[in-house]
Length: 93
Image (cartoon, rainbow, N blue to C red):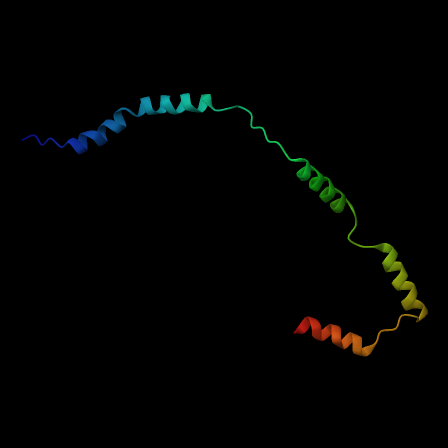
């Protein structure tokens, strides 16, 4: 007894014809451009330059550090207790 099932034969045909699919895929890949090109706007270029300068700089302002070190060492740096409490509460709530 022979059972003919077109769906089964169609699926089997995919496996036997996979060589032609691979050739088509290779041909498509070869047509793809070799180099990608992008154009960055002048505003984007300016932003990039500014970011490079910011990253190159230090996060610590040594002039301010030295100023406050000198004030603390001389005893001239005074903090209001009320102002300090207000700032602490500001961050907590």
